Amino acid sequence: MFAKVNSLGLNGLKAFAVLVENSVEKGTPDFKISGLGDASVQESRQRVLAALGNSGFDAGKYRVTVNLSPADVKKSGSAYDFPILVSLLISMGEVQPPPDNSAFIGELSLSGELAGTNGVLPMAASAKEQGIKHLFLPEINVKEASLVRGINVYGVKSVAHLAALLNGGEKLTPAPPYIPDDSCYSKAADFADVKGQENIKTAIQTAAAGFHNLLMIGPPGSGKSMLAKRIPGILPPMTFEESIETTSVYSVAGMLDGKAPFVTSRPFRAVSHTASAVGIIGGGKTPMPGEISLAHNGVLFLDELPEFRRDVLETLRQPLEDRRIVITRAQGKASFPCKTMLTAAMNPCPCGNYGSEGKCTCTPAMITKYLGKISRPVLDRIDIQIEVGKVSYSELRSDEKGLSSAQMRENIEKARELQRKRFAGTDILFNGEIPPSKLREYCPLDDSAEKFLQSTFDNLGLSARAYDRILKVARTVADLDGEEIISRRHISKAVQYRSLDRKYWQ
Ligand SMILES: Nc1ncnc2c1ncn2[C@@H]1O[C@H](COP(=O)(O)OP(=O)(O)O)[C@@H](O)[C@H]1O
Ligand SMILES: [Mg+2]
Ligand SMILES: [Zn+2]
Image 1 (tube, rainbow, N blue to C red):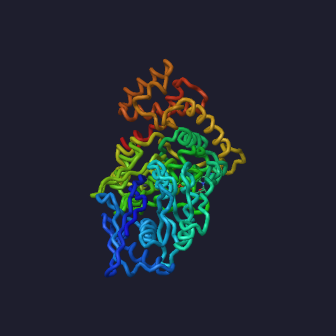
Image 2 (image 1 turned 90 degrees about the vertical axis):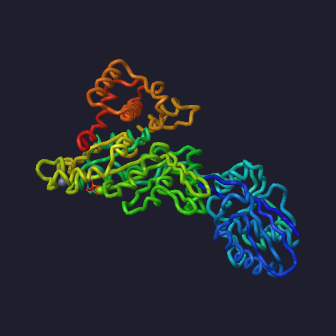
Image 3 (image 1 turned 60 degrees about the vertical axis):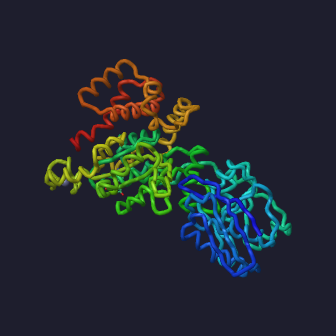
């Protein structure tokens, strides 16, 4: 007896079609799985046999050959359990074949229940593209799959439940489309708690409005970590497409909540300096997204930047530029998106007091070594660099109300509205993403701005990359001012946001 069933495999964030074929013959009991399945796929054998046995079906008396095609693509994971089991049940004559264009994904427990699996959202999206009309998967993954419209999704509890569904004991009713909550602001402490520091808050507001990378340098206790922790509360809401992208990353990483499997607010990933390169960048035998991809469409926060290993920081260069990370394996490439707003904080020297009159106890060599952990190319990719000073006693005691998160959100929303109009019909969402070829079009300067930028460029000996970044930040500063034409004051602010690298790294 022979049967075939559709399924899907996953490579990075991309899913591909897999055909599960089997033949079942009476004879010496045997069970082979061919088609480049790794150890986790080979283990399916035990789970499928146990799940069948415990559900009242005996496959132990047959000679079973399963083949997963295409045979030249490596397959991994436990989500082939379910299609293998279904194909066996069909061959054994225990269930009716499913409707045409059906596909199956899911892991089995030994007792015959279906367990949730990772990567369902990208697999469901890909299934639809391939003309699959009916998708059978574990109940817990139903909502996630039903984010994809135009495909019937059926939640299956167990082997017995599947048999009832295919043999007509229970009506096949597709799950209703999942309508997630609207995209929203993250909950975070309020910037109003931070006394003084209005310039710093304005710089942070600019970073969040245009999605610019941000570096804060200042002595210990100046409030850098306190400020950074408040950023999630002002990051603008995500578009539906952004939510789908970020949710796909969390789906593959197995980090979705089954009850509300949709990432509705921009992620904020605070990463420890003890994290490995793979943990930050992604990788592994079966490629998994790293922190930089979990921060996709949100913030990657690296506190105490010089504590990170230099080689780890260097590996961030390419993904910060390309906004995508490609993991190369013998079997091919996997890629994950990583459009992230890098936010970093650091002390200016090992003792932390460099720059404050007479208090620093470090030797010049120590300071150079410390700052040297952050290379020029990494610095070059950080659009907004600000020096955070300690708040004064009088400011700390003052009752004066400074910028609150609510006010910052309002300002950012206005700047976002201008960006939405500017970039309508393109795939750019923020000023921070303007490609070099479009800078002239999107960043018109008035005469004095033009002259000022030219003299700054000559006087400071700016690199082309720094020039691009100054223009983009000036674009956001002007947007926050509600102005379409960039003027001298906007450029001046943007240049000021780039002056620390000269002060500390010269
Ligand atoms: N501007 C400020 N307003 C209110 N509290 C502050 C301010 N700056 C620092 N603090 C207090 O000092 C603590 C230490 O700040 P922290 O963010 O850890 O500094 P850093 O990360 O720069 O070393 C904060 O938790 C907060 O209680
Ligand atoms: Mg800190
Ligand atoms: Zn020092």
